[in-house]
Image (cartoon, rainbow, N blue to C red; front, side):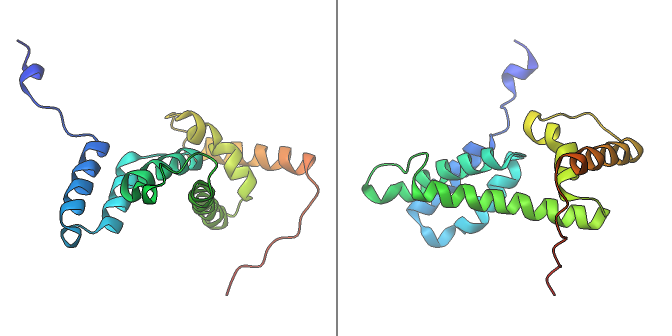
Length: 154
């Protein structure tokens, strides 16, 4: 028998979260569900806001049990809220990062698209990253009319 057959595998993020939910259902005071949801999504390492929204709906259905009316479905009102929150969060990160780097948000999104959608793990390095951002900014500027810059919140 191989050594790996004797060694138990580490629990998955889903298994860890499920154990927390079971404990929370038994004794709601013993588990901070808000904290556990944050930890769970951190462990999941989801890069795409659509995947985050989909997983959010699944978690919602597990925790809330959809108020006895059956599970909330794709396209339901709560799905729209969860998906909207996930998209807004992703947009906020892109906005902050583009401001910090001094590049357009859309160019940054174009460059990082393969990492988000395809899970690409190829390391670019800063020089290649800058080259790709400049190329994306030029391509985007040629296709889209200029839009006035938004003023940062004070």
